[in-house]
Image 1 (cartoon, rainbow, N blue to C red):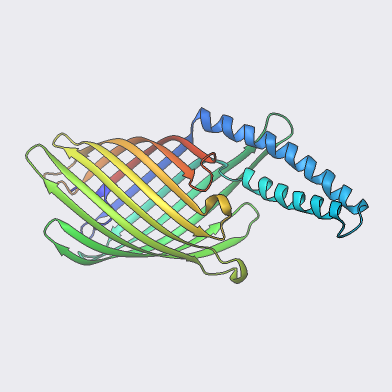
Image 2: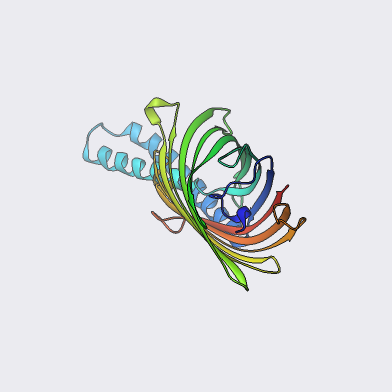
Length: 291
């Protein structure tokens, strides 16, 4: 079983797992984002004009109501146009095996966003996250396992405000071995909720599956998909799906195979299921070290 690609399996007592990931969007995503930025600029100018024009119209008249409805529509459009502006993502994580039943970890995330058009718009921002998680093995029989992972996360956005989240993740994993290769699969179900901002508290449900095959020479092919159902994240983010296809290579440092390094390169697609015109895709590279 390749534990680097299946989070349900705990690492050995006293061992460490180091993980680093970097992802960047492709040229197609950059072009699409630039088109949306140009549309945003035109829409914003029209919105500003209507807001000034409505001041000159008699309130609650037929014309006033028509302009008011158009303003509401354009405000919703401008909010949608500013979504999916991810440009670069970096993740560093360390996990420690407390004992055979429990692991503890910390994860740092940095995400750069860029909203750039052809002319007047060129805006960059970044989000930073720090997470603490604790993984507990609930049940294991043979090559099957069930674990639970509570997590506390703090996110700091471009405006300097911090949000605190709690997530509870249930993971199940299975592996099968043959003389040629090992096949592994995992599924997870998560529930998350924002702990502060009581009036606009965000929450989500997630479901993911991982499937892969590892050959005797350490070569692996991995498929990953994750669905989100969110509340109070904005209409475009209400339902999303993330897909990733990867190829990886593992090199063992010991005969017991509990010390190894795994490199992975893959391609990802992240899109809204509400409006599939909103999506990004690109390359992702990861490195796992188990010692």
